[in-house]
Length: 168
Image (cartoon, rainbow, N blue to C red; front, side, top):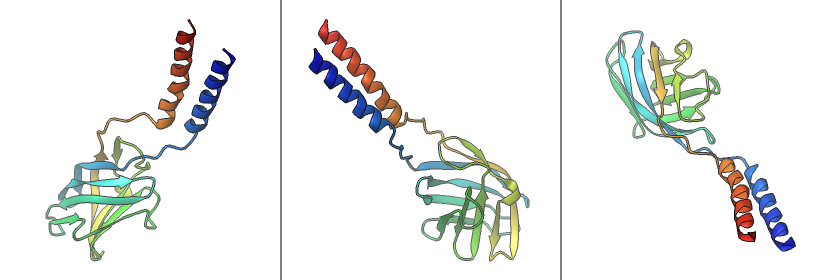
């Protein structure tokens, strides 16, 4: 019986130690919702963002005609930057001449819906002509997966139940 208690205690201790390790978030794909600009133009598309590394990739964002001509930003013609001096919750996609900047009040660290901060989100061509974002949000409808720590905390309980059942 003492061996079972010692084995169970060791297992519980190891599991609890593993549970305190930080979880790594997976990259999240966000879709633009109801994006409109002050000149009446609209936008649509998606981007994938990894909050842990600050990297963005696999993106395609299209805008319609307005004071600027219609354009599509994608990985073939543009680069994706996070932060870039405009704040921690800022994403900018640029061709070198054409820019689109999205700012958010919250970090895009988990799936959900995030409003675009219209006070500091815009598109420009060589930054001579601007159009500002009038409304919009980004959303990700991926179901949340329990963090590894949560799943690992269930293991000691299951182990305890197994040992208890076996001793009967």
